[in-house]
Amino acid sequence: MIETKKEKKDVLVRVENLKKHFPIITGFLRRTSGQVRAVDGVSFKIFQGETLGLVGESGCGKSTLGRTILQLHIPTDGKVFFEGLDLSEMSRSELRSMRRRMQIIFQDPYSSLNPRMTIEKIIAEPLTIHHSANGKELREMVEVLLERVGLNPLFANRFPHEFSGGQRQRIGVARALALNPSFIVADEPISALDVSIQAQVVNLLEDLQDELGHTYLFIAHDLSMVRHICDRVAVMYLGKIVEIGSVDEVYENPQHPYLQALLSAVPVPDPMVEEQRQRIILEGDVPSPANPPVGCNFNTRCPIAFDRCFQEEPDLKELIPRHETACFAVEERMALT
Image (cartoon, rainbow, N blue to C red; front, side, top):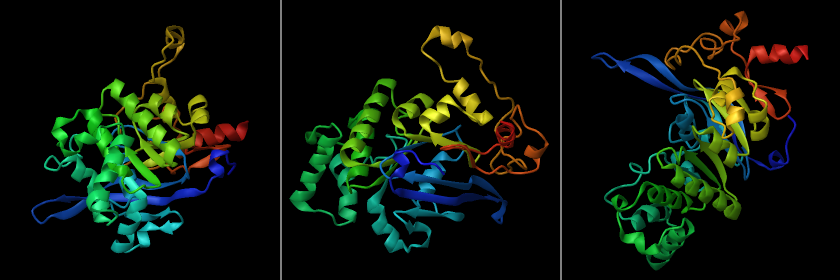
């Protein structure tokens, strides 16, 4: 694989054929009648100091993938390597010590903070659990963290309900930063916020990355925001990665028909350009992850699907330098050029 300047850095996270299936329990006897394939064979790398965007429709498995990487969900199959260490082989105590290096910013700033705890206790909790500080030193660290995310340290004794959504998300960021992690999963950190507040939170994450060298997995719906903040982007559909590459390459030269449809729906601020654009409307609904199609997951909605798409599952291949796609139609087109 040809590497960009960004990719020449060390691999921080490596995901290999990761799967997370949830059992479907039915009946009086609580028997397993099937499985929801939330994440179904995903492989990719995240490089030190980069931001990898993860996009896709609601229910495609983005949040589950992020939590499974952090072992908040135990994988059904596959492996996750962090700093070269296999997380799936670690004991509970070993994994607990590794959590100092891996944190998550949750999607909902209203339900992710304990309403019965003060902000000081919320931010101090990871420091207390990992015995990183206590007493006066702990209070000073909380004050520093609040200042770092742009909040007044005098707010430390207040409760979450006294803050706005944007302020609560900043508190969530401060909690994630408490143990100075190298890897942070940002699980749609701006989706519940007003547009003006979204920009503040994104700018905060970028400033912290520049200052502290964090690596992000940035999960989002907003393709415009992903292009602004991310170095590379991975597109997920029904539990699988269908395209991944550098932001400029993927946005300027989308290959998979699903990504082409997503990008055609992104508004352009130029009315002349917007008038000439052709929208791609996908027909049908997203299949159930409990009963995905045979062959390519996208074949039920794909406008260019052919016989092979209904019989075989395409692999993610580097058909263009630094740009991987899982699509038989793209493969055949590239073979003819």
